[in-house]
Length: 175
Ligand SMILES: [Ca+2]
Ligand SMILES: [Ca+2]
Image (cartoon, rainbow, N blue to C red):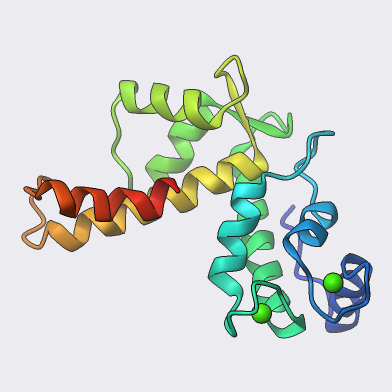
């Protein structure tokens, strides 16, 4: 069921097809056109920019072939994960499927938090989440969790921080 990573030759072809202007670099716009979330809607640009930030090792704001290989593996792994939790193969995951996924990642969240996540990352009805928004949710949640853990040194699940520490923590996550 899981989609294997393409061969080196195929990966190079995918990179070449995405690099529309033949610059040897994939820009945010080129990456957005190359990726599909299974709907007619464009792939989430906020996620694209976040992923470029994660894999752009040389700070060029674009993705070269070596960076692309890592990026593709990241997307492929998450796509396989998404499909695993999309039990009814609808191309989106429902609230109970999200619950199942996040539980297996070790998150213990209340019903009201799931409601908030569905409202923020789900479709307009808050009933289901497509792939790119699921990935954005997971990356954002990971970022928030590691920011929290940095303060929660005693692993109490509670932190006390100043106003400015709070701002410095949330802005990288929300901006
Ligand atoms: Ca290019
Ligand atoms: Ca780069």
